[in-house]
Length: 326
Length: 271
Image (cartoon, rainbow over all chains, first blue to last red; front, side):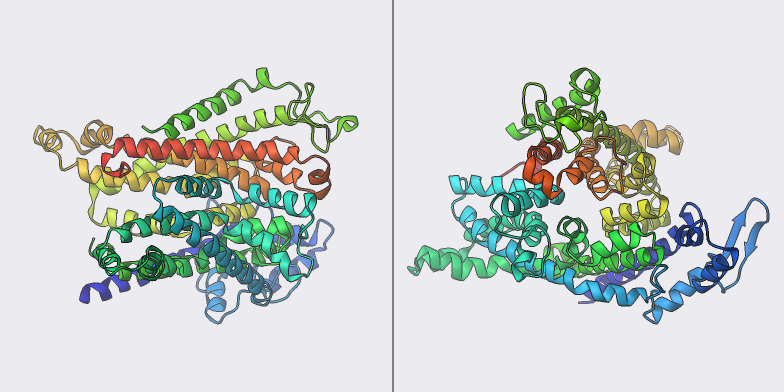
């Protein structure tokens, strides 16, 4: 028990350290933007007054960090009144700053788009499950058979084809050739299917393999022999006993893989013009050089990903004592 | 080694040969546009057809291998060197050095979603081949460092290392002439998987418009250009060929990596 708590605290500390590093990184990376953000946003024709007021509004006239080191003045202490400390103070109050372009709070812009990304991730997860569980069970039950090889092949395709290849191919097949779905989001509920399959392809491939090996492992357990000896039908053995036990780790990990999907949705959102967080980052953030928005999006996406991974790790340790001990 | 590994090696050799001899293999200039020959279907003149600007797709796919290989080799080499040095230091010195490096630094880099870090860096630093390679190295080195650290931890306890120490060899001599040569074998596996990762990341970033700018024929850029609805309607092969090229290359290096891992570590051989 003591061991578990200690492990938990270690994991928590590490997660906090990672989040701290991410925040530091996004705040300090903006210093490396070639040229000056004010000129980039306002253009070459802006007056000195406009530039100054833009810089003052977004804190760009203040020192970047607690200290500066340059060849002219050497080491210079700037005190606590700096942009790095500002960003942290704002962050602790739930403020991600204001967009360079629209002047709107970055947090509002992100919260507006986040639900679409979550929706996409959830649907793609559902699709991944509904492909992977039946396929994995069939493959595991009939190890080394034709169906097993077929499912391995499908899984291999899902893993090796990148999102940006699968997506346009699906668009070609289902939107251009057979015209079943719209190529990009048009407001109909079924428009989510193509992007969700694209995003969920890799997950369903990984999941199929997990379910398969889980089923094979469980089929060798004593309780399966008992169930068979009782005279239960093979399908009852598999679906009632084996699946129940074999799916515990799969499903738990899956639930937490949501974070990974959220972070991975950037490319899918671009392919299908899905108005989520990834497209906000690409089009409004990077495309329009709205660096404050880029900071916010990168921060939110990576923190989601990091928290999801840490949680997965924790739950996995809890589920599998062999990992806990090593 | 299993059959898939040999298939992987064969495809990888084809890919490398295509990249090296691209000027001899390519049938057309990759940037020359011919608006009279747009959307041509595959034929004797244009083996893979032409794209929306009338450029020869076959030649662009061949030259695309060159970009992928260039990025892949540079990223893998730099990441291997940096990762080996840092991993060796962590494993050899142990103590607080190791606590900081493997306990903090490795975990931080590993915890970050790799592609997002690359996107963020390119967004702030600007696009271009050099910056792209830099960003991929920043996320890439840690895999090698972790492998080397584990190996060094194991090898430094061997008798011959103790013997060298007893003979009065310096730390550097022990690390570089005794420990490292015996620790680098698993790096081959990592490098092969790293190659697949780098090729994929380059294509992903170029697809997002954050990698190698057009008109350079990066496979990612080609797919981005080929996914317009009018192209999909008129000439789906423009999408098909670079897509197959990426998938085969990534698959090949993954096969090689997995195959070598099994070969080098009999415990992992399939049951």
